[in-house]
Image: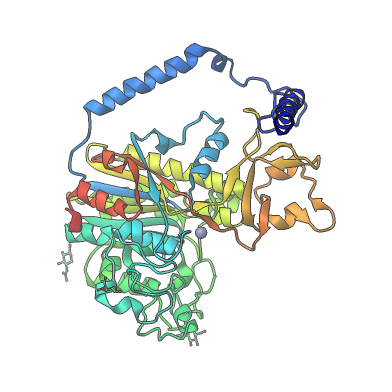
Length: 516
Ligand SMILES: *[C@@H]1O[C@H](CO)[C@@H](O)[C@H](O)[C@H]1NC(C)=O
Ligand SMILES: *[C@@H]1O[C@H](CO)[C@@H](O)[C@H](O)[C@H]1NC(C)=O
Ligand SMILES: *[C@@H]1O[C@H](CO)[C@@H](O)[C@H](O)[C@H]1NC(C)=O
Ligand SMILES: [Zn+2]
């Protein structure tokens, strides 16, 4: 009897499948726009097309095997796409034209995966990760340039020298190389701060923030002051990004009329200029794209560029809004940095951050995040073209992932930022969506349920992609991030490893620091 029931169930299941199709993998039907799922590129229909592609790949692998680069890396450039998850890179291919497109650094010969967890959290932030990928030590969430003995917000936690973690920028300086940083965030933000700061809370970018947590700002030195006054920051030849507000008192206005956030009366930009004058070195401070274009890198030893009161604009907005073209692009900043740093015959270490990939994701502005990833890739291309892979190691990675997914079964012809198919409620859903974040509020409401999405809405960069869970800011993701490498010892970067291994591998390639 029982056997008959089972047999019946099996037959029923099979009939069901053949009548309705496989519910997990829908059969070709019609897509949202009523078109059949036509083939986008006719050559992809041919077996030979794929065979030829594979042959070309084998040839390039054979060539690589013969030319494994074991030169000493004179220069090292670390590109950090903040929050640039693997999904973000994949989706950017589509933004560039098609699933088969290549984001520039995907063409690098070696790729690996980095494990991003921090000492006390599975999902990391940009602070503890910066200590890992710049200093080689994992730490507590929210802390920068210190080991995990230092708990977040402990006023004097970062003052014990034993617990301070030095970055590869310091190792480079100690070896006679120059060092610099470029970011589209405030130069005091968590990722760039990993280059030069030691602090128990990432928010302590100015003295007011330190006092706000009941610490004495004359003892717990804020990040902006560390950049200007402490050895590694003082020695940086290039500092380019945003964040003027962290450098000047609340009673002063910057060049664009915006007030500072400091309460200690300091004007750290003037202090920096004064300090360089005293040292009798050529130093330039610029605050606009025009100012940057007038800098002669041959005659500039130290370059400080602060182009915004806070962060630089999203690259997509920079292009869409003429007024923001007054700000330099990440590629332009990268070029200026390399030109200044290249003067040192001993070489340099440069950190370049595409910071706003992350910030766009936090707001579930998927389009902006992909646009910033595309510009980040342009900056990598600029760097690779300005340097030689014989002597310059370029490593591209991210600090942590985000919770954006690529879902549905969109046709090859559909935009990545557009709609996928209709769901069971008869309403369309987007190909990109997030596990959590602010997009919840426009994607769903208690009375009507899911919003009736119109494709046109999705053309707007301000559209916040739908989420499952309501959260004011979307969270980071805990998945591994990719590492792409080109140049001397790029082969070190294949495999799956701890994020904290990255600076050790770079330093080994350059023969600097504790891993030389
Ligand atoms: C950190 O803490 C551990 C014990 O918890 C201690 O053994 C170690 O010496 C401390 N300092 C450093 C720099 O690791
Ligand atoms: C700096 O700003 C604080 C807060 O507004 C103010 O009390 C103080 O007088 C200012 N210091 C100077 C030197 O302007
Ligand atoms: C400063 O540098 C210039 C040129 O590099 C040199 O001629 C001059 O003597 C220096 N002055 C001092 C005070 O060191
Ligand atoms: Zn973030």
